[in-house]
Image 1: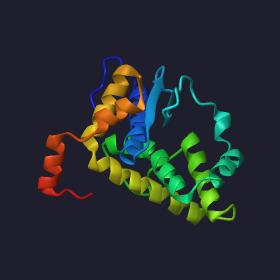
Image 2: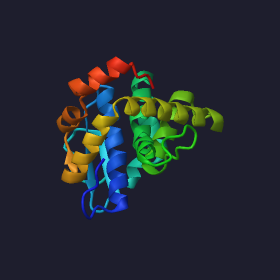
Image 3: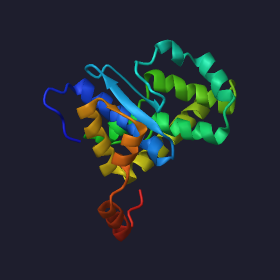
Image 4: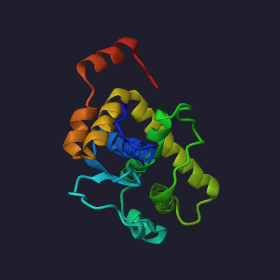
Length: 192
């Protein structure tokens, strides 16, 4: 990913984070757009529903999220968990040390969402170890998905840095593997 002149480190990190969410969703057949605001202090990726304002922290309270997630299909919830974990995983993949399992610290709203998903799937009596395993599983799957399509992630991040907002169609077009990338992957049979 290139950096735009004058882009702050916070903005670059937010762009990488939101690109991770959107690219992972595209790889899993979901339609998510992405947006960053201002200096990168806030961002959002999610279903392409005309998102125009920053998410409100109150939307991330665990009891209301757990209730909402309990009504969802388990497979759908696991897919959503992978997309949520992909934000921080993508930031770590861009970092010099790279992604290291069990060391990815998913925080903020993403953390609240993952914990609520774990509670919805495992029940409120889930142990700390069970919740941690759920979070690590989601992060590991996200790392595998993003690593396999890294050039596309870079294209999405570059475009998001330049435009600050991408629709799901934009993300899908940029993330799509080119013929050359597909041929190289098949030639080398790269398995991550």
